[in-house]
Length: 193
Ligand SMILES: Cc1cc2nc3c(=O)[nH]c(=O)nc-3n(C[C@H](O)[C@H](O)[C@H](O)COP(=O)(O)O)c2cc1C
Image (cartoon, rainbow, N blue to C red; front, top):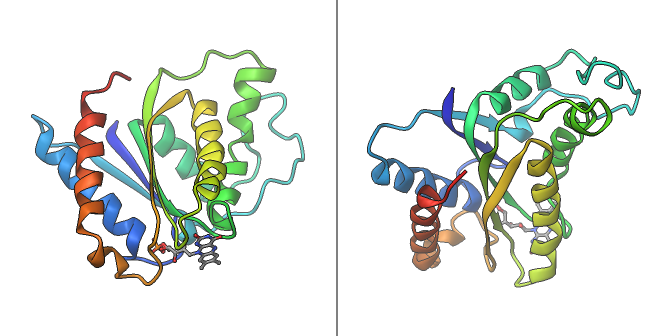
């Protein structure tokens, strides 16, 4: 069981959302009495197909598509906390991340169609970056993440928006954002599940 599952939502590595996520994880490690174990999903690198709405999960709650999502399901089931970091793309989350999220329809089926007891309550965090200072783009994205997390019985306890970031190293012009990420991490570690 990993203490934290980090989900990297950007198409590019070492950009703004990766940097903010890294600061968050580092701070969680510093604040924790024991070394935290970490698991990672890079959404853009998943070799997955989109949900076919085939209803193959309706009787079992299990997705019938045998691709890398099967490992992602295991990672989600076997982690205590879930942290998603993603940029805004066209007012929403990136398409590859949405494709991954749609494939969790089988979890929705388990709980709401088959009436199975959801997995134990966990807590989540959403870190979101965008070029423009448009709060409603963040509202849109965080609603998707919150609804997805609730399907996993993960309560999104912290959601934070970092606007004005576009080029991959724009984060270096906003050192206060890394301080904000560290503060969010310190709050998060004290919150109940
Ligand atoms: C396809 C695409 C669509 C984008 N759409 C938006 C948008 O609607 N609103 C916005 O504020 N920024 C938008 N951006 C800018 C990114 O959110 C911004 O570059 C962000 O810092 C990227 O995060 P990263 O460095 O973690 O990859 C878009 C970028 C791309 C590549």
